[in-house]
Length: 255
Image 1 (cartoon, rainbow, N blue to C red):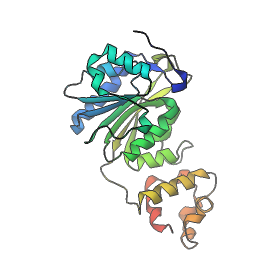
Image 2 (image 1 turned 90 degrees about the vertical axis):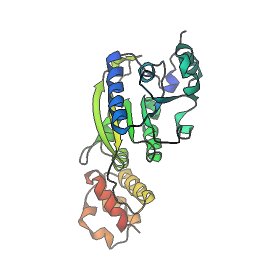
Image 3 (image 1 turned 120 degrees about the vertical axis):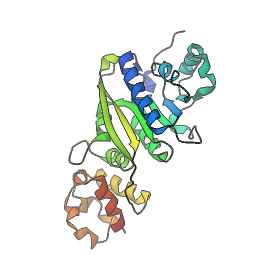
Image 4 (image 1 turned 180 degrees about the horizontal axis):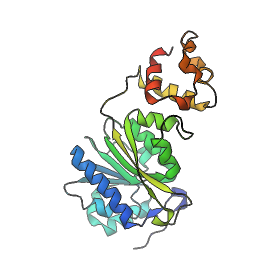
C-alpha cells in the first residue's frame, strides 16, 4: 500500500533506522526508570518509530494522527494498531490515558511549539517526553540564560521539566529531506518545583518580559509591579539574563 506526503501537514518521514533505534532506546530507558507503561506517539506518519514501539514489552500504546491516509496505511501494515489509533489533531484531543503517560514522536514542525505548550498543560500526567524538533526549536527549549535563543518556551518548559538535548538528526535521515537540521530532546519532570505565587502570574510575567526582550525588565514589565518593587536591581536586567528561579521569585512581588 502506497501513501502520499502532504506538505500542508509538515510531513517529513523518518527513514534512518539507526535514529529510530536511538529514540526507542532512550524511551525504553525512561520506561524502565519510571515504570510507566502508557505511551502516546504523536504523528506516527508511515510508522518508522511505530514499528519499534509496538515491539516494546507490556506497553500500553496509542498514536494520534491527523492524516486519514496515514491512519489507514498504519492499520493495514500493522493490524494490531487498529484500536490504538486516535484519528485527530493532537492539539484538539483530551489526555488519552487516565494515568500518567510518556509522549514521543517525530513532531510535525509546523505545530511543534504548540505541542510543547499542550504538554505543559498536561505536566501532571506526562513525566517524560522524547521528541524530534527542528534543531533551532530544540535548542530554544533547552537553552540557558544569557543566550540569544533563550526565551518564553525555554523558561516555561524548564520551570516544570529538566530539558536535555540528546542528538542531532541530519536532513538525509528523512523523506523528503527538510531544509534544516533536526534535534531530539528529552523533557523529564522536575523532582523539585519552583515556588510561584501562581502559574498564571508566572506565565504572564515571562511572556510580558520576553515580548519586549530588548528593553530592561523595568520597562518591559512596568505595568505588573508597583513603583516600589521596580527599584530592585534585578529590574536593570533584560529578560534573557534572568533564570527560571529569578522569574519564579519575582511573581511574589507582582501587583
